[in-house]
Image 1: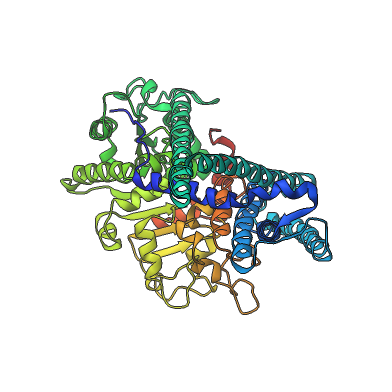
Image 2: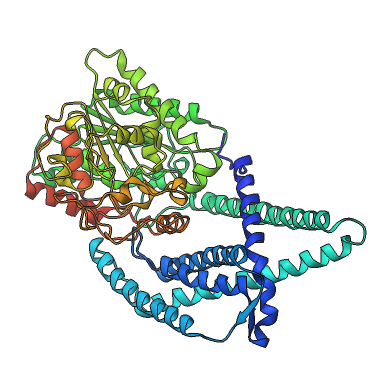
Length: 589
């Protein structure tokens, strides 16, 4: 059956209620606006403004990636609202409800000077951070625009709070003649909270998911510029294929149209006896569930003679059906085309939506496909080597198909996971098993004998300190590629309430540990309750913007990773030629 979004479950509804409650508490300070024209402020509102200023300081601290103006605006606005709520609550708890002057004081001027100084320092750090990830720095005007719009948003929240307070007071006045004041207040608060929940659930969450789903369905019908139906019988979607070109979706068409042919492999690698690589991709079509899609993959394998190739790689796609060219193409170049790349589409919505609406779908799709291929080759006297791979949500799906590292190594001949989200159970379990002293950003597991975590190609041979691994890397090899600056890898709900280990991993001088850790995150980054969770969540929206192999981009280094996992030696000149060809011919999607 075609993928249909599932509405958020009870946990998300509870989150909506909690958010509405926090909003009501924060807006308790709003009546003070009535006193501005008299130059007076309630003590708790003045404390709220001071808290908002402190929130601005926090918002200007660096996170994982350089921020564009809109990310700065959202971070500043959220931090100011949180700071205001905290300051107002503290002012209410520590003093009598008296009024203070609303005119600037020496303290206000001093705080404003600090804010201005920190803004300049933040701009300088953005320049340093952009250099770390070879990205573009946010301009001074854009940075100022972000801070300004964030502050405007903060003011809008306070004005909205004034409206809520007006409705609350009016409701209490209507009820207090019939019932006690405390009961009237509870009923008014419950009514406003219920209304906020309904509006956020029905109008915001449901409508956003529905809109994204419709848009994704339309994008799934596109044919990206530069793609064309393949003519080679070795490819799904060709005139000889059981899987029609119209059935594989936009991402499937990019996979089947792109990549090197035998003539390209021969020219780039300067080798002879090259095979035409096999690419099999099955799309998401109405009336065909996951089992039907897997059966279609098996039929395509039998049609193309895939079982007679030396290497078979099973890729789990992301939510839209996307599979990285930097996972597909290196395998074909390194094996001289004597390989099969297999994948299938289980959804057409972006990965965050797919994760919210049906979290287990990637794992189910990966498990069914891997099991079917392994069962097919199990009866062969001499079977191909089987590898599994995935990036982002695809890495989560692939890893979830195995209960443990031991099961993975026993059943397949190698594994490459890149940019696996923090909730990927197998990766987190490996990280927890790391040797004492090794960092969470780059764990050392079992002396590097079976698994190696990689942030840079140097980590294929050397650990986080730049030392050779204590043990030889045995086959089957498992490579987990993750960048220190990748917010998809590091965001976790626990960021809101406790500091993560990966953010505490600094040397005595406050700088990254020595050696070849290749940390592309500024050492000035610090954890702040709630705010760091918001900042890293915003970083996820810009994770693919840095150039090169930073953030959530896993590109050129994947050639060397695949060479190591396959056990193929690559000369530097050949490596550069392969990388140049992939960069030039990758399909723009």
